[in-house]
Length: 589
Image (tube, rainbow, N blue to C red; front, side):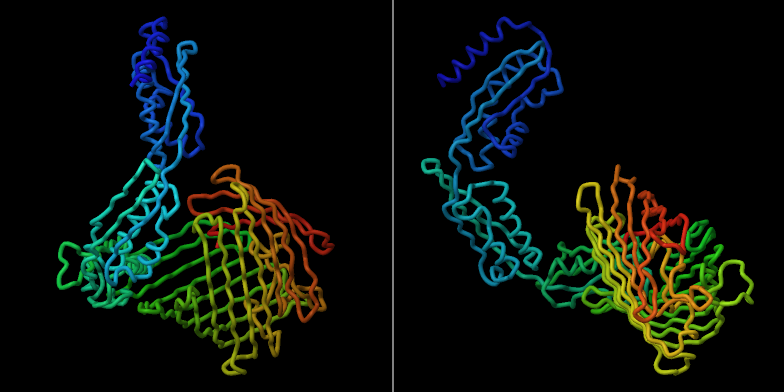
């Protein structure tokens, strides 16, 4: 009490000669604490509110006297119950400088933790793990934020495991300042563990029972919050709805069961896309798309896409029959007509596809049959007559099974800071059954992205493939390997690299190996530059000679995806010259 009176008298004398009715801001400085405790004190002391606001002498006087008590209150949640603060105050011009010297004193430490969760609830792995790792533990400083987080985590784990009526009945912390000790007492009444009841879908546009295939649990199983999240994710992934809200009907729990309400709002049924575009591999063109998110009450889907470009005409259609369940599958039936004119080949083909897609241990597995039929020329450059020596012509029909596995991991779909993708595919004919030639082929693509600094990103990729074929001349360009282009070796034209025939014309190879590295630096959230090096080639047998390309690029995170503009040149290649422009827009993975 005496110290408080002396402090008030001293402050009164200090302020007596200062100008009356002066308004100014306050600069607050706190010493003796680490950054975490200092931030807590500054945010709690009311003087800090006047760092950018006017304060009168009377306000400063009153708040300065309150500051020591505010410091003590700010440090108690961190386990410091014996804090002591002294201060200095002076006027600098019309403003105030206030310094608080803080000694947080000896902390209060936990000497015992008593947690009572009766019955089977304590044996649940999620609850048992939290009890064993409760913080603050014995010997630790009593941090009330950590204590509250651990306490609430146990309650949340009980509710998530089906103990929907779980109550925290004891929650006390006994603090003894004489020896700076604390004892924690916690006890819960878990109550009944509920089971799943009926799943009720509201607002659905589908036939009764169809959406039940998406439910990952069965009626009568113990309630688990993670299962509700899985149901919501699967319904969102089905792309039928604009709104999916999955909630337990807690107001009508009955007979130890709880029903699940799923509120749905259908998405727009038809999606139209289209417009002009430019691709360095295709030239300028226009594209149109029509997607039917659902065709009928069974959730069938239908996608159509038309591309008319300088060097590519393509029309494709794909009909999908979803087969949701414990393993989500879909049957797909499609057709694609393609008329393509590249740097080294021309082809006109019709492809029929029938396959099944399914998720397996995080992999998207696609297995099916392809029928590919058409005519082609290889080794023909743009605007050359068909009679030019060295041009190879052919036609073929191939029927072959194909299986592919795709897995991706990314922290963000729009701009990947840390992620990777891996694709492996195998295809081949069964002898000469319904096919003009016999072949087997395996291809693999890998990509790795790492944001190793706040503004710098490294991207590594590799493409590899090998083919065994009885008659290479019967293999259409789609199944031959070429290198070069915006998604291959960016220092060279699209499909400009590969083995040549006796007329020095690129005809493609039976093997492929291309790798690339790109270093990106971003000046802002949306704009950056890139430097890249690509190396590799298509080849036959063991005759591999890597072509190297390098260059610089521009990056823009546009509203429709990442836009990449790269200028690449060949390195030490006497056959290829000039600058290659590569433009790609789309996701990183």
